[in-house]
Length: 310
Ligand SMILES: O=C(O)CCC(=O)C(=O)O
Image 1 (tube, helix red, strand yellow):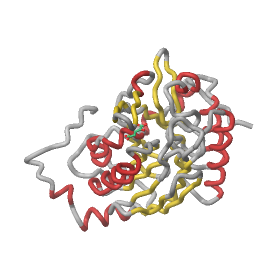
Image 2 (cartoon, rainbow, N blue to C red):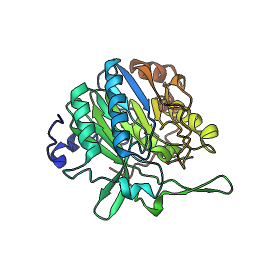
Image 3 (tube, rainbow, N blue to C red):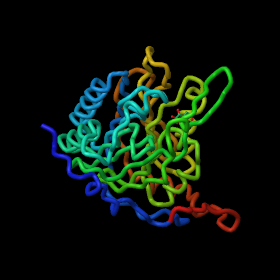
């Protein structure tokens, strides 16, 4: 039976969302020191009920393997298309969100911290591409609405305009969880280094990007961007894609990956449905940053990260 879903407003524990300033040195790191993460590269179909079942089983299996942090892909409950977003959208703040009910219940049942990829969110007359974060009691800790919409035109290759249906989110999302301090971005958000820098400056230990790159940009940019964000900020980076579904109009690149703070690949995969695991040791953050103290060596007299959100 589903865990009863208290009013989401009450569950959105905004006080847990770190609002610390974008300092020029890294903020102190909260516990724990080690976290096993599962990154679920789910097969996404046009059947929402099936997508929910697939996600639920993947989370349960990941928890049974000992994962404490579980990550789902971008748009895991619906096909990635502007036609689908309005149809599959749910009111996350409302009482009848099938996806949120399932996620909340399975997080509570398994006791994992759940970074629930993204789903199309309806709020009034707007739609957002939204990632929900649940704690091990199934409470919604935070939600990230994709900040940078995916509007691109590469002639003969790919044209996509999320802004036809979606609105962009208000800002960055830093969330303190039992699995550490996390900075959330969705797919295209990974292309903007300032967002990752801002998260690092606020003491995040891991940057998590549910995403669905494609067959044009995926092969060239997906891993490069994840490793670039990791090496620049000496931080863990997780990307989580849907599996490639041959019958889908949008061919996802797959290749979900976990990157360490030396930009080393800790776990990765090809494009099929699977779950990958990695053990993240947060003491490596201090080690890498003391071996190579980039944040101290920056020429703060020459340039600065301007955080306009505090
Ligand atoms: O940046 C890219 O190449 C792909 C981004 C994307 O697919 C998305 O933001 O959903």
